[in-house]
Image 1: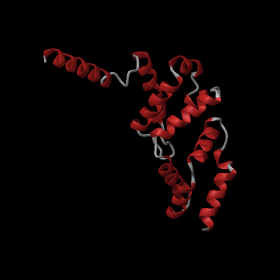
Image 2: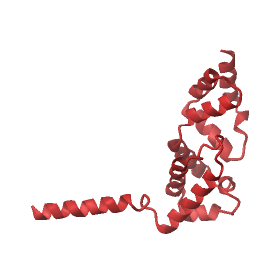
Image 3: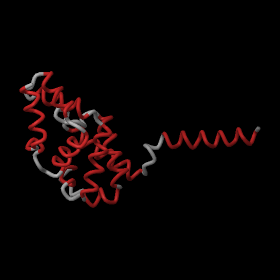
Image 4: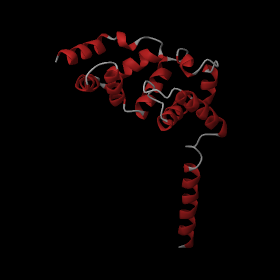
Length: 165
């Protein structure tokens, strides 16, 4: 009985330690995560999907988990997070997009942005509902590759369909 209780206590201590250490990141990794969060939350406008600290932290931790500290430091030119995206491999960019989509409600974000751009609430909802996961990933990849995602023929077809319908 005491042996079982001892094992339970050890397991509990390990779980509590894991919960309190920032998700298992080293001090150096956590410092970089904090730096990324600070950069992401600088822009507090509605146009920034990561303006909320919780969303920014989720994304920064995802970047760290997917790309790693060494590679992040290689990509960090001091010009900001977005500048490093262009130098990432396609696989790295895709993992960043997956991380981002796991942190925010992208259809809701798109609805807000489109409504702010002049579409009615119904039209904005129609567009965001018309975006499937592949289209969303394509738009995100275009954005982080420095391209204008609004030039997507697929996106334009969805928007026109919702405005006419």
